[in-house]
Length: 335
Image (cartoon, rainbow, N blue to C red; front, side, top):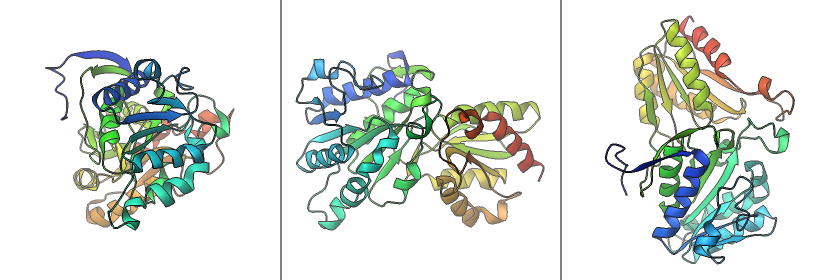
């Protein structure tokens, strides 16, 4: 399926969570090999209700509960994918993915390579709600995307809107490689938009230029795009023209789109919720300074979470918001 033409297809107003559910429903309807598994995802629909009604519609063998073991969920999903199923596994919170880390980076990511392409688990997608914004404290608020971007053989995708969520999840489920699909839970119900009711896919590995500008490039993904867009609007009031890019895919990330933009604007600001040290903004910064060094008018700026465990009552101080981004925009432009 190609990109949906919003002017010619039937759409329905959905929030991001409903778009996820619609994508799963669409994938299971189109392909009998698609199987969903995870903790409490059956009758209960998962802690966020992302899988609501899927067991009722497609039956227990295709949407079923697992024991409370993330390592087991990942291992079982790898096995399903290796024997020909299209496995969509849910990790209840991205923070809980760490017990499954070995299965994902040492098994799923290397399955094809170690066999010389004789076998693989490419039909594997792992969904996980990530990030802050729900007062979840240190065990329900982390952004672990950078850990997995260090692993060849995986793909890492993060949507920021309902339209993206459905199109990217369908593409992830059908992708020939294992995909980690992180969902920004802070905007599960807050982000609302028109979504095609039909089947469509958005390309993995392609960033979206949300807004064109001339003075500075603002780059982010997931829920952080709301903060970036607010900051860009504030900067426009000061006469600063911001180019806004939603990365959408972190592995592989769209180097060309970002480099083209920075070559034009001469400045780059990257914002993510994960801590600054070791965050994926560091990789982007290194790559762009290599490709755009002679075009840069100021140092590349990172606005990120703090290098501390994710706090509870200080969540607002920890998270990079539109005010922090706005101040960083002004500092970069006036450097």
